[in-house]
Image (cartoon, rainbow, N blue to C red; front, side, top):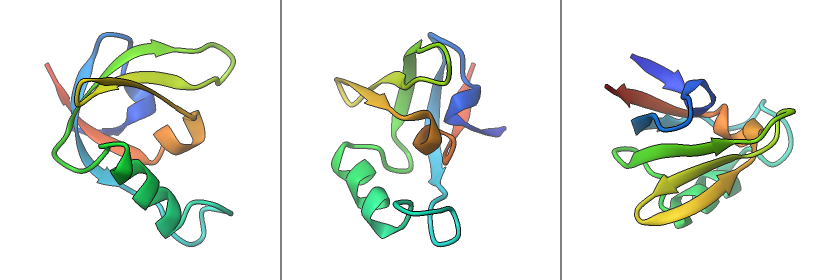
Length: 85
């Protein structure tokens, strides 16, 4: 089942299926953010694990390709994953 990255709980793992950004989502969510995510290793088919989710809609810390990365919640909502159980 495909869900936004924000739906995963701490310790859960998924595989990125899509990054749904583009025009109409507000400023900064076009091609530039897709490239930035790709530069960080966040591409479809990549395994990603939630390390920590900050309170009060703060960033989500993830483990991907051997690195820990913090992602803003507004961007994480647009990264879709297939949950690995």
